[in-house]
Image (tube, rainbow, N blue to C red; front, top):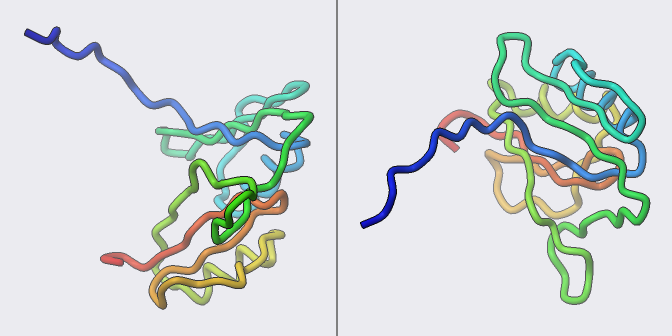
Length: 128
């Protein structure tokens, strides 16, 4: 018989990057979330209303993932999904903040963007 699961709370997702402060700044502008940790090699932002945040960790040997995946290239291990009310406005805002639209888009109601260091993230409409 399996033991009852222990109580776990997801406190954040961590993205490796060359400069945590710089990448945290991008996501601060994108999401409007405040930075709650800022130290050498580490930064964290969280939603104003609380909940799961995003942390950024320095990785000296960071290699940006390739989107879409390609044999022999650095694979994406995880990506962030953000639901938005207006897809075109969200994409424009993300680009203004420093993202770039990925050249490959698999569907119309979801757009794949790349953050300043190349992590893919998606913005999508409710129900998509």
